[in-house]
Image 1 (cartoon, one colour):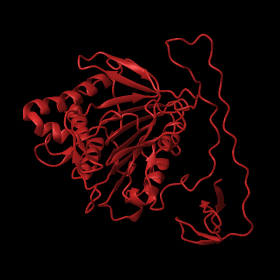
Image 2 (cartoon, rainbow, N blue to C red):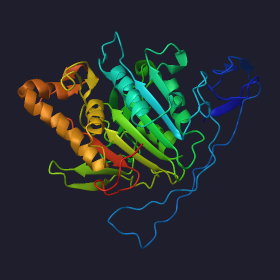
Image 3 (spheres, rainbow, N blue to C red):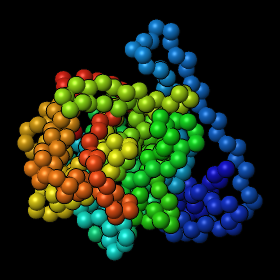
Amino acid sequence: MVMLVDCSQCRTPLQLPHGAKSIRCAVCHAITLIGEPLNAPPTPPPPYFSPPATYSNNYNYYAPPPAPIPAPTQYNHAPPSQPPSAHGHKKAVIIGISYKNSKNELKGCINDAKCMKFMLVNRFRFPEASILMLTEEETDRYKIPTKHNIRMAMSWLVQGCQPGDSLVFHYSGHGSQQRNYTGDEIDGYDETLCPLDFETQGMIVDDEINATIVRPLPRGVKLHAIIDSCHSGTMLDLPFLCRMERTGRYSWEDHRPRSGAWKGTNGGEVISFSGCDDDQTSADTDALSKVTSTGAMTYAFIQAIERGQGNTYGSILSAMRSTIRRTDDEIGGSVVTTLLTMLVTGGSAGIGMTQEPQLTANEPFDVYTKPFSL
């Protein structure tokens, strides 16, 4: 059971380790002495509505629960470095992790983060003050992409959002999977992000990502996620996946848990582009840009926008897939197949499977008529 205590100086809620007699605040660094053990009862789960009898379309229907009042946690406030507040209803978190000087090192992820920021600022008019960057190059220790800092950045992204806001979450780094034991995953695996310190602090599971930046979104708020990592197809645990054929035909797969667990929003809209399917790997290579190392998916996404192929979600997804397939054909043979199927979590490469960028959403829509906008 999670126990919380307010900081004695700044009153920030802190998560108390079991049996601890004192705790240091991450915000003001004051030490709070713990008196009698805290025995707060656990918060009961919110009730779920029964599915209406008139619902059809062969989807299992689960209505969203009433929006619960979020329990105080150490992540319900901005990072201690005071990241800037949003301006013009646009706000973004951009994460690029290179895992430098380790066996997991990647070459293109920080470049991905810089390119994404440039595009958001110059093409989509995101104020620089509204973008929180987490990379190993940052001098502020609270902007290093550790597990703790990524968690706080995700909470900051959605905190205080209002109707009309446009949010972006971009991640370029390692992704992985772990066994799911709740029955919520069709393939039996949860997808995970790998922070810089994942080997000691653990990974961030898709259930937590969904609970932090998907479920709280109120009506009128829009979130786009761009996830450039291995096993990223359903990284946000969104209920619907657009299964697109090479001909351009598509259908929406229902990924809602049969347990009835709610994975949608509180009325907002969430759409995610990801580098590959859950059982695939994403390339970290210079094969696409031919100039510098980048993530294949981030490069293809930006190219689609810059070449005027970003009018609809369907045109972007088709262009991204075409860019990767075209490079495969041009470079040819086993070399590009090897590049585009690198198992970046192990540093090895596989043969015979190229990555296919994916599109997921909280609700199905017509991908060829819905305009894309940030």
